[in-house]
Image (cartoon, rainbow, N blue to C red):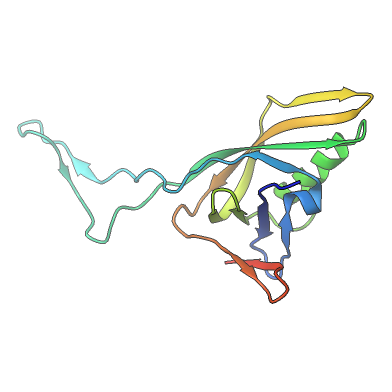
Length: 166
């Protein structure tokens, strides 16, 4: 089966690159295409006896706000297997497995990668189908992107394996 991949790497030194399917058996169903963030508010003064506002507009360019993205993931497996899979995945994202909290993320579908990303929440609208054929779980995770400008790309070694996100 052909699918696009989401690569994750903790920003802690010597952290390995993880891929959501290979390492967690979790597929990405939807990743927002957020190439740019909103600009931060500019310093300004509003004089009541004048039209408009006086704004400080920096010559070196506008600074961008951090932002939040909601990513939809899904997993399919044997009956009662989804709880174990999602717990392992969330332990990694939250750093409760000892790997650290801050991470880098790259999506092969959007071709967008960011650093200084962290887990913020598991949304309440998870959908679980559990029957004799097994489990199908669709859930959404929110991430905060604190560096909205640095592009992260995969680094591939001579054997076509992603070894780093930079």
